[in-house]
Picture 1 (cartoon, protein in one colour):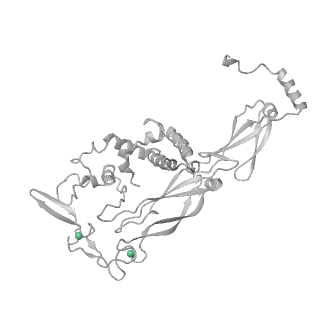
Picture 2 (picture 1 turned 90 degrees about the vertical axis):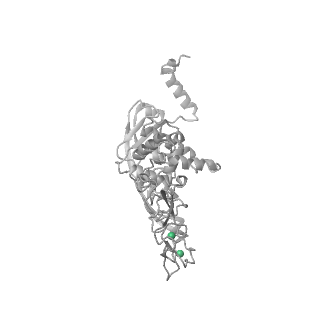
Picture 3 (picture 1 turned 45 degrees about the vertical axis):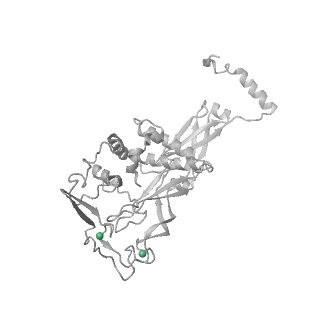
Length: 382
Ligand SMILES: [Zn+2]
Ligand SMILES: [Zn+2]
């Protein structure tokens, strides 16, 4: 993930279709709606839907998280680079600016993640782009998709993901050197990784072109990875999906992404979960939903209703006389178990209308209608 650079360019609020003042709830609601609409499963013939789905997920990843949203709002206040200015660039490159060790002045190539990392005190925000030549590099973040049956999503599951990704080379164990040899100190820079270039009153230092800033070079490259230390190969990742995961949720598995280079840490693995629908139950966050048809007589006279629970049991509800269609009955604690507490089972009763009536039934309904007040629509005024 290299989102910080995108923070300047992307209006996550606009992507989610909410105002910047939207509450966390409104943001979540907007996100859920879009995620449902744009879900790749729902749009198999529309490749742009998947792109938008990812965009929406990425947006929610930031503004759906209170802390990240705060940072994002701060960053946007600074404007696209304008507020930062080169002179005031924060962090190590800032104060001295022109002294040795300040790095190159090619700010276009500078990693905003690092700059912002200095700004916000989070050293963890390194981008991991391929163009970074110097020192240890963090591995790439990866994203994988996982389809889960409804009940496994509710209960949590341990499963295996099959990925193809950058791994430390199996032949050289990531050193890039042919087995039996090792990296040697770079002759060009004497192991410093940078070269000084005195130009009048300023001393510039640039990354050593011979070793790419690493300070060491491999003279005898590993034949398997041609010296990169990285090999692309399939691997299996065991993941524990927590109970109560929701459709379109992204789960971050720290350090399970692509391998780092030059001793850098591995990236993270993001698992995007797709939850298959259940024929009986629905989900609304931590709550389970269940729609139960009742007859007009049951709704009018009242009844006892026995309904299933997700764990295979049943629960009996008392439906009072005069229950309107669509009324929701809450069964406490029979929803999804989650860290924040177990949700409820929301039972919605729907009055079912028979599509065919026998003569006898028609007469009975007509007799009933004759005793009921006139149509209950007078308030519409037509
Ligand atoms: Zn190798
Ligand atoms: Zn060098």
